[in-house]
Length: 257
Image 1 (tube, rainbow, N blue to C red):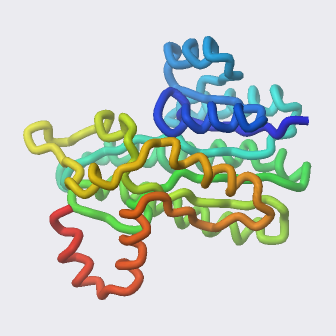
Image 2 (image 1 turned 90 degrees about the vertical axis):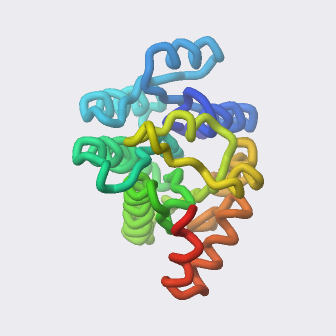
Image 3 (image 1 turned 180 degrees about the vertical axis):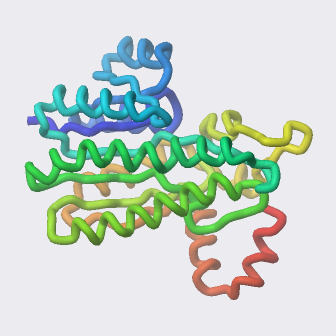
């Protein structure tokens, strides 16, 4: 029997690359997306597809029920990939914008996993793989709302991993840095006259979304996967600096990023 994997956010970028890569590797991929046009496109590409709006509890419940029905309650893995960014100084981010940021990047992830985790527990095995970010362990000016949502994903995942310690369900975090996708173009900017741009170093060291695939395979297939997978050189170097440098020195490095 093919192992079934649900991937959220498959309309483009990392989600679509992951869907194609896992299908080619022999997994049964269930791809989710938010828009009907993307749903139609994924169906045309031959994917089993469900509509999923992580801002909407009814949509989450319906999608989860469809996934469990399609897999006969035999879902091996969730790749919680869907997300977006709200960029701008924190004093320009409204409560509504912050709530929407967390609804998609964190609350929806929590609710979806709540619905699907019991099936993994009943079969005694599974993987929950979270798309975090370099912003899951650092925060920079203009990206505070997005970073806060990813910090939450990191803390939530750490707790869930410990709660599932005596099971064969593994929880992993992927922390990419700069990846060449449409993410930056789709960011919601709070100040159109003063948009938050990525630093030049991000473009210089950016990798294609296919760079995620070997990490995703490792997280799905190894008996003891890593807790955190850091993808790009920027992410790996920043994690080391974060660990060894005093906070005030890190502030000097990050304040202009």
